[in-house]
Image (cartoon, rainbow over all chains, first blue to last red; front, side, top):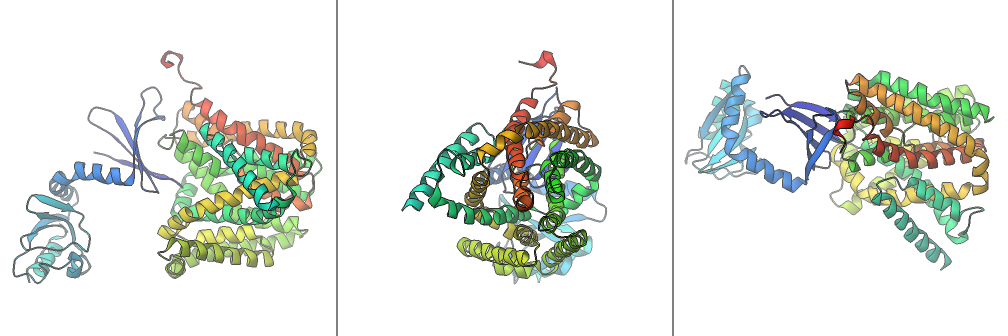
Length: 159
Length: 380
């Protein structure tokens, strides 16, 4: 799917895409953090019909509803499209010195260049985990990077 | 006691006017100007005691208007706009400044007066227009980026235009004006370098986590810089603009939020003071000139918007919406007038009348233009 991104000076960004039904959908992301969702009409392709607005909190909730269950498959899809980039999973063993410590203390991205984009913990997925997120024994880390980078993260976590 | 009472009554009155303006989603600026006319010299209800406060408030108002303009600014957005819309900016300048310059010459203004009138007819009101686009829910429209790009470039051009104007208006020669331009360009470059390389230091000191501290620090340092700028005759307003440019990222965002109420109060004082300074009796003789200029200003801005939107591949209806959106002139035309006012006495009434007309009909035309050129069949 192609998403078109347009800069709105002084206001923020506008994203635009066409869905499978052929609707032209636009999303205006304001600098202040709120969103406007709109649809482009048939009679005038340049005029947007406002559908609804979302505050920051509402947008976060909607993003979670839409994003959480699909996060792992999406990353798998993404890596197919970029040569040299792959996704890997690293399990945090009980023996790991990082179990019980914040994700940030691994300094994984600084040391390997690979990013931990999600933590799968039991049935739940923590998407884009913050550096403060505590790692737990049994967590599965979803890592995106080169093969060497992913192996590097595995070594850091497993030692 | 007279001061508090007069000031209180004025503020309550302004709030009623402002609420009415917002209710019909047009700008309160012309109403504030009218209030100033009614209360000032030769008006219907003079307010002697509050006058001094309004005068002082007005000078802070200009500083805050330009500070927040600078805070809005973002280098990435400017370069993006420049890359795409330089021809639109040139069309904008040529088409819109010319009527002002010609009118100034016909009215027999001094050279700085001609330059000021050209500037006043050139610059659209980014404040009125961005608010209007948001109120009319047009931010998502495809012609909107072209409109916003023009506003960004106009605002940036002020950094060069204002110092030249100030130097010439204070009786400087062309070479002094040239030095003024160099000082201005130098300061803008310096401001960008500072914000780029040491911005985090400046920002760290200013960006106190406590909002009250942030407000005091930003406001305090802006006033100091503004005073220094005035000392080297670059004008306080330009100094404040530069401070705004230096602040970036979240600091700029937070500063905008904490300064917004202050700016609204002092900007209101500024518009009142402009109204005070112009006697209603002076407006009548210049009304034909102002009406003619306004008519020209409507046409030239519509052409500008039409041209810019067409560059973005927008259909005629969108081009018309872009053009009408740009019509409103407001706070910066008034700022230009106040900076040059002393040197050319005829300027004040013309610009005041001009802004009164265009700040009122601009938003109305924008709103109505949504239905123009709509195919008849689809009209409900």
